[in-house]
Structures are given as structure tokens and as C-alpha cells.
Amino acid sequence: MENIYTDLKILLTDYLTTQKLRKTDERYAILEQICLFPSHFDICMLYDRLKETNFRVSKATLYNTLDILIAADLIVKHQFTAKSIQYELKAMAETHSHLICSMCGAVREIRDSSLKRDIKNMKISRFTPMFHTLYIYGMCSKCKYKLQKNNKGNTKQ
Ligand SMILES: [Zn+2]
Ligand SMILES: [Zn+2]
Image 1: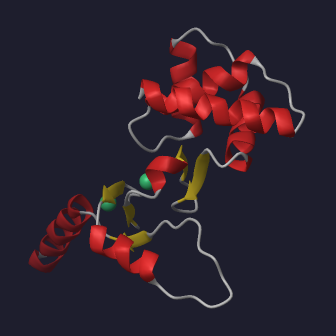
Image 2 (image 1 turned 180 degrees about the horizontal axis):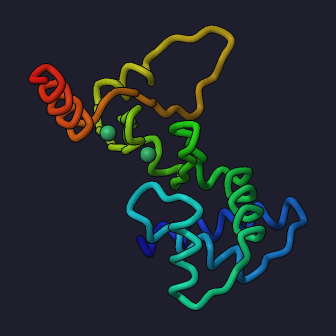
Image 3 (image 1 turned 120 degrees about the vertical axis):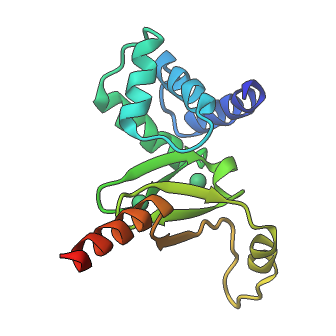
């Protein structure tokens, strides 16, 4: 995802300039690592990734930079469940919907072009849609299997 970083780097520079924020190496290094994630990531994954590249940043810097990247419209924050907060590139977020298992918190992506088209064609008065993302909550196949197995076990007793 080298080209996406090149594009986003320019957008980040624009944002930092207009907001009169410092253009620190950390902020760019964090964005670069984010561009390497194929999809969602949480703060621990990002922290570990930076550590592997020998780029030492504090968790405070990390949170602060993520807030800047959200404000700059480059990434989005997902609160999938009460415990699970994940992030992803905004350019990626609109390409799929999210299937979230309410039991284990696993997140899967599905691409549904007809759904995307329907949302785009929706006529909404006095509102201009700019971005959407969809969460569908349910049960993943692993949890469903476990549940069925447990239920069978219970009925035998
Ligand atoms: Zn996503
Ligand atoms: Zn599950």
C-alpha cells in the first residue's frame, strides 16, 4: 500500500499546516505503519508494529496521533463492541460492511455492491451524506457451533 501512504502523507501535511500542528517524524511513521495494515487494527497492534520497526512512541503519542488522523479524515474509529475499539483507513472503511459477532467480538468484512448503491441513491431531505459504514451484529459460525455443541451436551444429561 505504498501509493496510499504517498497520497495520505500529502493530506496529513496539508492538515497539519492548516491546523498549525507540528510535522513530527512520529506522526508520519504512525501513518505509514497504518497504511501497511490490510484492514482493521487496534492500538496494541499498532504499538507492537511500531516497536518491531524500532520506532519508539509512547501510548500517549499514539492516541494523540490517532485523534489527529481521525480529525484529518484519514482514518475512522470503530466501536464494534463495548470492549473492542478498532481503527482503519477511511478509504477502506467505505468499501465494506462489518459483521460483528456479539459473543466473541470477531469482525468480518463483507462487500455488498447493491447495498452500497442503495445507500448512494437514497434521497434524504435536508442532509448531505458524506460517509457511511454499516455494522451487522450476530453470531459467527464458531460461536454458533460451540453453542449447538453445548446445547446437545445439556440435553443428554
Ligand atoms: Zn472495516
Ligand atoms: Zn463469535
